[in-house]
Image (cartoon, rainbow, N blue to C red):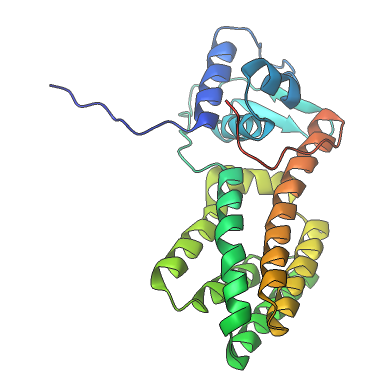
Length: 246
């Protein structure tokens, strides 16, 4: 008896499979301009965030190309290179999970962080600011900041979970999305948002710390969402912050 893999397929992978089949069937020829993301979402009955993740997956596979300011186009297949299978978590799911978890961690930190831990958080901010000044993506300082907040919980499970979620930034989908829409302007905004979290923690204001962290992560999602619209579709329409209704 053969045993089948029962792992549920992520919605973005199902959408990517549908689009790949349409490309293979010639519905979208090489060089063709794909419909705008919002139109694909309406036709498929899913959220724009899932369509975006599907398109990024196809870009990672080399089947489509995002031309900033123009749109998304079908690329010619390269028979010499194997199609890369994307099994990563969707970036928007990762951000939403972090929003729920890290908001509470920030609130807890505002109640329990001691002076030494707060100094460590401020050191992480200085690392972020230094990296940004040097034109380097401030991932090291950013990671240090979020992990030090998790360390303040004194809970190894929460620390491991936050670490794993943050490190999803390195997965192929997240990295590709970031390559299009992250840069010095977005890093500068993120630093302002991080400092708001630090200020609330320093004032021992749990509700404000929670709100500041959730605002930062929501703004991170909105920046990814709005960026695609203005670059690839000519309209700065942001995605809804919630999940799929389908």
